[in-house]
Image (cartoon, rainbow, N blue to C red; front, side, top):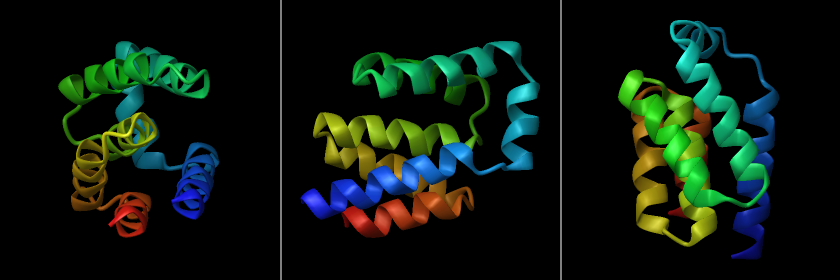
Length: 109
């Protein structure tokens, strides 16, 4: 379990610093989405997982195909111990062709 958490943390760190043009374009389509995204990451980094989940959920309502929002919300669920919700979000990110979502899903499965 500890090794899974380390690997998932590594994947999240990489994804946060990897440029993804399609994701940037999606966030630029809505000022609110960019704000929710930044807030979600800040809450996650502070360990405020419920708030992070709420922020990423707002993005998903605005941009339902934004895979990275599902991916990051999956991490918040995972760190809360809500593994089924985490797996569902990683799977959705994977279904949206976000490779890191597929990797995270394989790790927790």
